[in-house]
Amino acid sequence: MDLSPIQNALSSGSYATIADTCDELMLQARSPPFRLASRGVRHQDDWPYAVHLLGYIFVNDLNSARFLWKSMPMENKESSPEVVAVWKIGKNLWNRDYSRVYEAIREFEWSAELAGMVAAFSEKYTEKMFQMLNSAYSTISVEEVAKFLGMSEDKATNYSLQHGWKLDTSCKMLTVLKPITVTSQRLLGSSKLQRLTEYVFHLEH
Image (cartoon, rainbow, N blue to C red):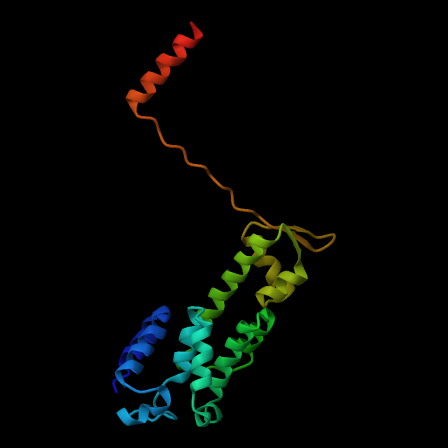
């Protein structure tokens, strides 16, 4: 089976397309993942389970990631520490154990194939968590922000300040910058504006 579409997506940084690409190739095999060998792909060596699994995680499709992990051959799990490491990220996301997501990312030495995708996911996840904090809090401690963003307190403080938050150094509390909602108003056409002007003129006279 030609797996070059997956490699092309990785090399071009098109990480959001990887899950669908893997799914399409798996469907072409006309068999469940554990029977890919029937089409010339040895599940232990050739099928990129770590990439496929991370592809689901990248687009936050945790149900599919969980299903793929459960249907994966035990031999593959035992022989591929990277697959296990990817699922550790997925499991912590599933359990909403936010700080351990970052631990799972940092504690494994990722292959050259996956390092870029893991880094992109980490950045995307940090942005998502920060937006969640921005929506949920008006004030929050530096300690809590650091935990949610998987950073040291100094880095979390700097990250927050760069996004417009304010720091009270006396109590190490951050004030969240809420987005300003601008209500757009439809501009009146010239004829409507003229009629409105005439109406106001009659009211005043």
